[in-house]
Image (cartoon, rainbow over all chains, first blue to last red; front, side):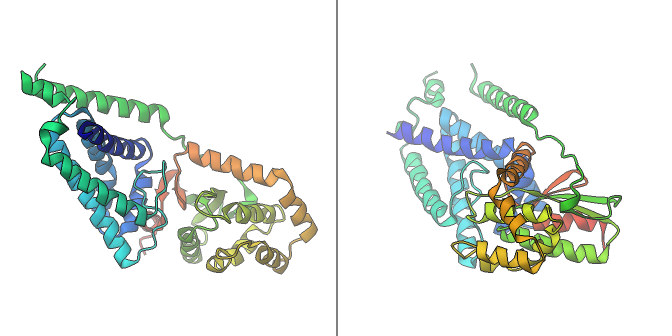
Length: 145
Length: 202
């Protein structure tokens, strides 16, 4: 169960990161601008770097390599998503879609904040029981050496 | 194999795969083919803009208003061409508004209809069917209504719109408004303003 959950969370990040990395960075920049939380220079930087972080965290969580660190990364990312989408909803910003999965899927911000909160909770559960979470992961192979 | 070495190998393979995929999937460069009916400004202007628009998109309406102010200040320095990119999965009236615009373009009334349609977007987007409003606008700008209705009923206008959307997708467009300013891709009105400030600082 823990393994399936770990792989599912990793795949969410791979799917999300890949959709953004493969398209022009300007599309994700537009999404970031809609949340109105960063200065212009940081928006451009984030639009180019953030999808790679999502992708790397996703790959490491899925493979179960450096699992505790990768899960902490996932926890931070989900936390950031909840905060950013939450502040946009509180401020009543006119978001038509969260932009979380690039052009692949359009989700309403209200839906995505619930999904992210659930994923945040599940990642926390995974971190609480690392021996179960590491099953079928590469860490287990290296731990045995 | 050492754990750190495996990590490095995974990162390198991942980077290689993504860079390779980006290379093969990289968007084409947009070419400005003269579409006189949907273009305005000086064709020899130093700033050529191709805009992919969804007429029901609020940011597109803001972008059009902003471009009008820039046009007023620098009438000879900008050439603007509009291409269709209706986001039909998000906006129920995206296709019908594009159809009316295309049919208006065929009667040389694209900008006249656009000047009515865009400012009233927040009203007609809430209607179940905006067609009576569009028909009234078409009459107001002096369009030939039987000719308009024949155009709306034909598949030709819809094909032009779908072809332009397909072109936009091959260029990597996923949102509107997307602009190509002297072939540089710019998405959204904030980036539009930032980019145009590099050409017109004052």
